[in-house]
Image (cartoon, rainbow, N blue to C red; front, side):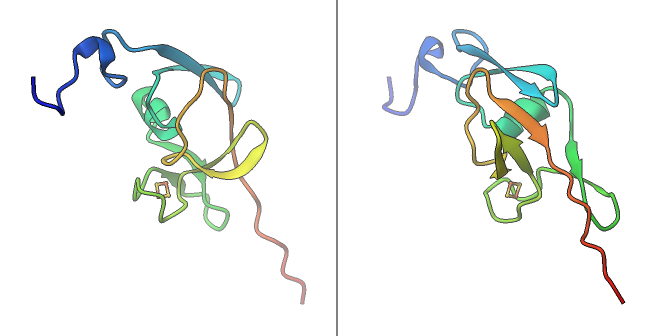
Amino acid sequence: MAARLLPASSDPIRPSGATPLAISLDGETVAGVAGQTIAGVVLASGRLAWRRTSADGRPRGLFCGIGVCFDCIVTVNGERDVRACQRRAADGDVVEIQHDALPEVRP
Ligand code: FES
């Protein structure tokens, strides 16, 4: 076996033999497997967007997927501004969608 090949039972990404986990996304339980990022768990549940822009209310989710754009930010276990594409999901994580209104502009 090549050094890069893992038996399916040792591969954290494959469904068979993978360790299941569950996170709470705005109170809804979402299932995933160990090794997935929070964005991966949410995308696998069928959601493509999980927050809206402050200015126009446009949907945002995964854009760059590498921690550069901040489109995927969520609150995880009370910690704000976590990039969902960079945080590995842990069983029992409480993930909340962030929406911050723009500050009022006073004349
Ligand atoms: S998708 Fe760009 S930082 Fe997460």
